[in-house]
Image 1 (cartoon, one colour):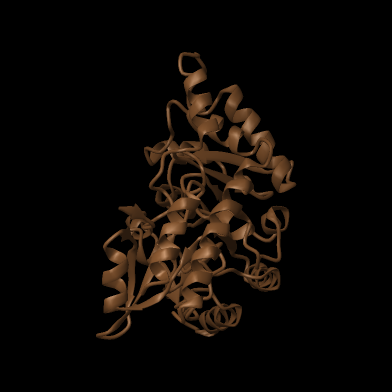
Image 2: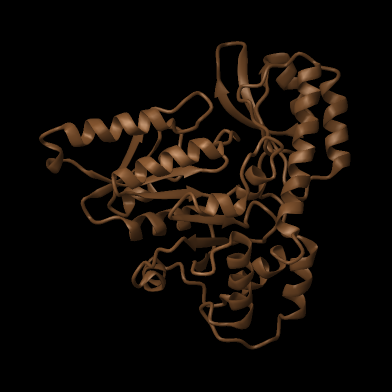
Length: 344
């Protein structure tokens, strides 16, 4: 059985595994106060072009989203996101569990938060004479790429950022799949540009080469006691060097971006194979997630030898499915899938 269900089914890149083994018996300070974390922070600051940035390492995406949003919001504030946003649909109420409301607004079919919808929402909110009796919008959350593998353009991000500045609220970019977004053939911005178009974002490692780990980057924004807040949430890893070492390897010699590019290349091969068979794609994704619309017989044929995820039921006959490649996807596995697609 060949699996295309997600991009975190494999362990980690061999360079990381080697370094973890080589340094296994080294003694170092705990909680991220070690040479590997410090070097990794320096590499990330250089990569994002923000020497003044604050960088922190966390273990997973839900944990990271919850802690960042909690740190940015006051008790009476909530976080604005697209209705399809990850924090709204796939994080088990983690944000609400922290005491903050998710203020979901309509999103386009592709899952992107429309800047016009955002501006209308904020304008209407503050025009309401009773808005002081409501949950106040304090953060705008988006992900790059979106939950559906689609991308914000640089121009769209600039508009969203200006709206946030106008209303004095933070812009937070979930980068769990950041590498796959930035290395897409359709991306029109780079890491440095993205870093300057938000207040905080994170670089996802779990889904792009690391065994686990996310690198949080605050752009010219110093959150008081952020490390203490991490500890309070039970998220401060005692063996913090395990996180720093992984990002040190990922940001040496451009490895992070090479791995992301590989995943996208394999995903585009899958996309073209479906298109060649006349199969429609539910979203116009140019990242590592592809969403073909299959009928029952097509699904049953592919499901014999491949694992992939049901994404949305369209009607009694058709459903959209997700095929996900990763940094470790083997080209032979994609060859096998393409040959099967030719026979559906």
